[in-house]
Image (tube, rainbow, N blue to C red; front, side, top):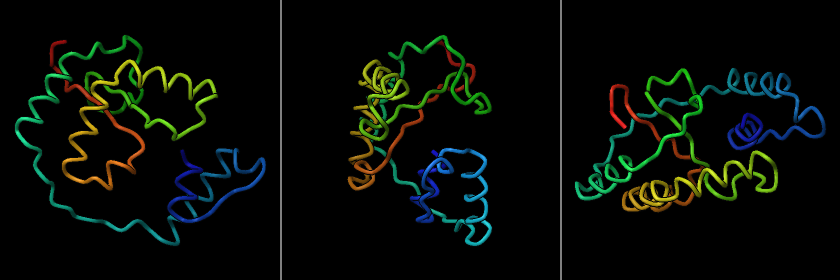
Length: 141
């Protein structure tokens, strides 16, 4: 992820073994951010149709959340998972196979979320690489 961000955001591609060393990649990324900090953007949100919200909520209520620990424990939510877009990583790796299986298991919420995004921004719907799905604290399953 960090290597991809370094390349996508700053055009820096680390070659060979150094490209896989987390400390090296992190130092390069921090150097780039120090030289060219992120711009702060303020965007006004766009409302999703009420019917689409109802459909999304219905799909969310059908999710059988995994009993495994949350993927991002510092996120303040009862449940949290990330679904990766197909074709983003190496589908033949162990991680890729796991992500593909997870996406298949939660395909209905993925498809409905993509449909909602397409209604608002077709270009972004084709470009986004992952979807975070959360359930707020205090909600019953």
